[in-house]
Length: 186
Image 1 (spheres, rainbow, N blue to C red):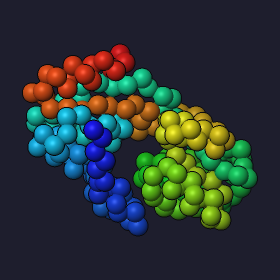
Image 2 (image 1 turned 45 degrees about the vertical axis):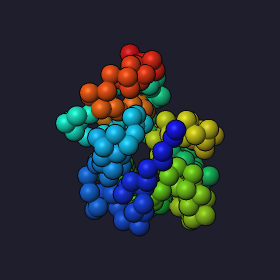
Image 3 (image 1 turned 90 degrees about the horizontal axis):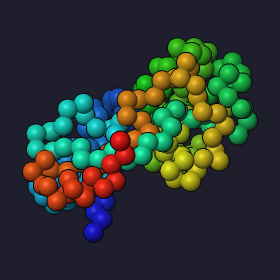
Image 4 (image 1 turned 180 degrees about the horizontal axis):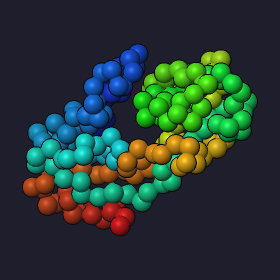
């Protein structure tokens, strides 16, 4: 059975992530369900997990990784470098905002939140010039055609664990650990 758990990070879309909490916004409720044995396996974007696992939980597998770059999306411009002075760029990430402004201090950064399809829809309905998302998320959702540029690492470093899917289990559940091991990609 698949149980979809909507986390605080999924539900609160009108406030910047940096203002409402830490990385646990996308994982804490799911991990509580694991610890309560309401679920046996949790699927996470590795970049959303805390640096240290909560007591009683373990990362039992990491699936084959996608390219970790951030992606540049625009209907008008081919790359970050092609943006005109003062262009408006959307991102929901403080990390992306900071690196983009370090590289191009002339840009205007707008907050955009929601899942990937929601962000694309919001972008398409806006007057924004570009948007930055994770390349891996776009590719995995079959939305790679929106990518105009895989942003080079000398412009923007990805989050630790970006592009990797982690399977989390209870550390005292050998059956779930064994099942997850089947999809682990060293």
